[in-house]
Image (tube, rainbow, N blue to C red; front, side, top):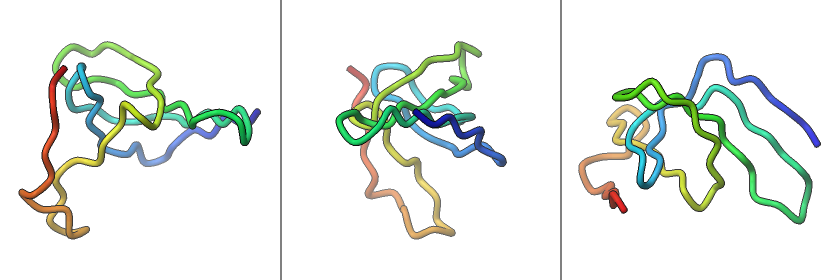
Length: 73
């Protein structure tokens, strides 16, 4: 297992929770998804989510434009 604190935090979207900033990544090894620890912007809640629940957010500088769609489920 490895734990990596992200500095700077990475802006992300967590399906079902909303936008936030990933502050850490946890890797349990090849048989597991990465786990992202994210502070949700609107609520201040801290959640850990798998790769399946994480999406990049719109960032024109990095070429992720308005075509990025997120589903709140």
